[in-house]
Image: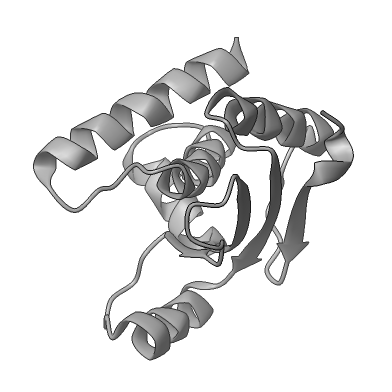
Amino acid sequence: MSLKNFSIRFCFQKPITLKERRRLKDFLIQQLRKVGKTGAEINYVFCSDEELLSINQTNLNHDYYTDIITFDLSEKNSPNLVSDIYISTDRVKDNAKAFNVPQNTELLRVIFHGVLHLIGYKDKTLEDQAQMRSMEEQWLKTYLS
């Protein structure tokens, strides 16, 4: 399987340091292949709290700040993913301070969170949240080792 079937882009409307982008893309592709995905077009958009709040209000009728919103634009039951993932750099920075973790680690956690949603993980119930958190930690440990 060629890498050309996978496209992961990082778009910065609000700057944040994202280290080793090529390595990160390769890791995400590897994780997607492990669950049977044969292609993906994923656009990460890094934006402000205010922009993500507006997206949350307009598209989801939620009136609160969040660190990430993942839009799955894939065809139903397709082995190929299509997604736009919006991440608030303000929330990432604040959460890193609140959880006393390096900013890059928190950024990776949120990036992984978006892909985990795309492959079927949820976070609505406490049980779902625990499974999601466990997978985030597993991916972080693998990626950072």
